[in-house]
Length: 218
Image 1 (cartoon, rainbow, N blue to C red):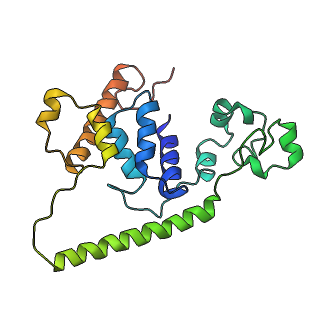
Image 2: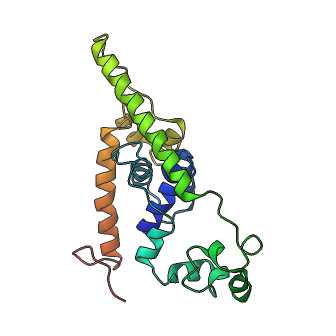
Image 3: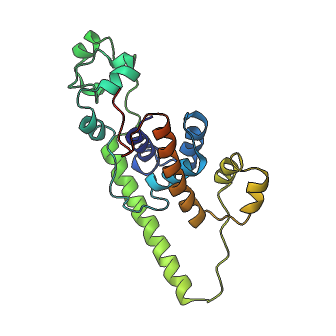
């Protein structure tokens, strides 16, 4: 799955439209991706959901505009969603807007051959941005209150159960013992950086990227 498609999926599932926990998406990618890597997967889901590392929640991917920008003819859609292969490019990103006659000619009637939208993107994204704004404001207020209050040292936070389970699948024996004190933040960030570079090295070795990390033309 192309990294831009991963971005769009992650944003749509979490803060963009559906307001589902990033851990749900992480688990699906962990199971389904052929290049799944625990640290890279978890880090990117936290990033795209604005749960960590990246906080510009007002920058929201549109599942329609984003696709139009990078694939104006809808070739990716036609290949992986053959039910839409005969839909005119004008409507392929929003087939529910095509006249019924056009849908029937393309043998793709929305609601019968292809599902109707599960959520109105414009309304859902605006509502979720408001939720994100409230969450950040509450977090900021709590941090200020804590700073003004007791000077007791903060207790380290435990990793979310799903994140811990996913990590445990990738950590065994001596590795687990060596980083038994792991806490989700700095080490995860370092793992993400390490995995990014290691993934690049693997792809260079496989002939998918050249030394400048550009795709190799077949």
